[in-house]
Length: 607
Image 1 (cartoon, one colour):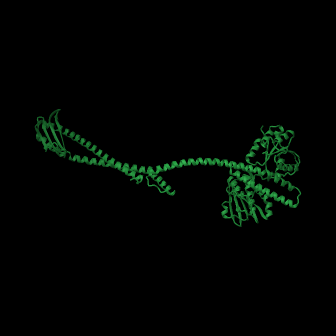
Image 2: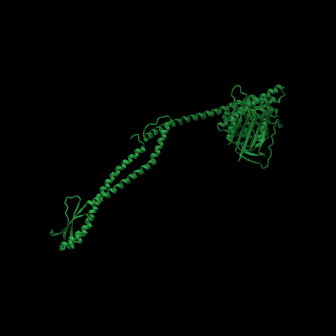
Image 3: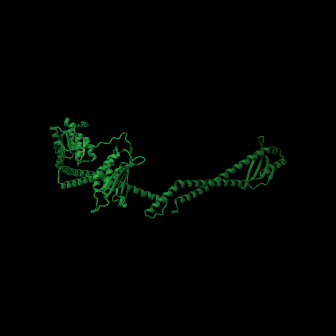
């Protein structure tokens, strides 16, 4: 019995209870009905014969036996169950009689006496005996019928209760039980031969254990998350520190190379200088790639949408690689299928960086043939960019991981191509950040084609005016006085040499305190301010200068630092700096920025 399914045990229990209740209800109904019908029958017969005695009272009064016997015989014909009837005067004389009188102790006989009255005066008695056999048989049939329908109603009710319980309780319970059995089999555990309630109870215990275990795991995960956040912060701080420490000497190296390239050197020295310049820029690009990926990884890069000419952006990228493509004998061309000057609304800087990475990668892995950059529409609205090359191609198994960071096709010591494997990873993350997609189609030995699809707004300009190239200033005509605040001796020497050769008058300060002293003594057209310095850093120095005097309030202050994070840029704006030059500083850019601020005043500072 214990091994039977719960629904079957429930059905058998309902059936047994229903049958027992049916028997008890039937017996109660039969007893009640028998007694009720018997009493009602007696009362009905007595009432009928009371009416008859009234009709016979005149004959009894005159003692007309002949008439009484005829009427009694007629009564017997109408009452089949009538056994005996006798009429006796008040003096005890029988004046009418029909049938045989039964025994007084006969259980199937109904005996009673009715008084015969005439005008409220008793003139005699009528003794009546009737057989109850047929009446009791009719009552028994009626009682059994009531009992049958009562039992049928109870059984139907029990069946309906079972169906409802099966649908609302036992059906779902069986499904849950089956799922628990399936889970046990999937986990390799033999399901226990227990009933559903026991299995559910055990499962609730298991669930309580797992919930407690999950709470413990959540605590562990929360601790791990906190450790991960701390580690990520430490990583970001480490990368920022390393960036600063690497950019500081790189500024001196690139600056020294720029100065040397302007000198008249022997041909062999010029070759070595160019090689050093290429190697330094390669190192700088790799450093920038690592920093960019770190910014993307921590969500520190934001998309800044603005309108720009797509073809002009593409031509700028092509011009960057024309010399390197010419050196390798590669045909580098732009296929503009936009057919008109198209203005796009997107992040020009990030899109330019993606296209630059793809074109540079194509030239890097192409020894001969061509590299093509193609622009086209992506319907219904968007931009499609193809970068196709005839290079070495990519193996199919490698195509799955080529967009992963720090991944290279050949990472051995004998590899042919250098790099840290960050360009494609950064490109993919940047494209996805802008809501686009990047795909690769490649065949080994035939080349590769990268396709960038970028959803963005495109429209024709109302009036196209090409952006004039900004003039590159190599020589200042103003001879403006510049205060150079720099604690690193090598960087100070490089920057001073570049500025003085460009025609500026340069005063140097080794920290913020010296810069404040110099400004108190002399007026300058502009300040180039490093940020990390001993005694007083650039941020504090800038805030002090702004509150120093009227000259300090309006003096343009440009940050020139190896701190290149967005947080550093924002802080520079907060303390009142006007522009930001990231080290290593390109000479042309530095002179252009200085020229753009020469003669201007700082007006946004709110003291």
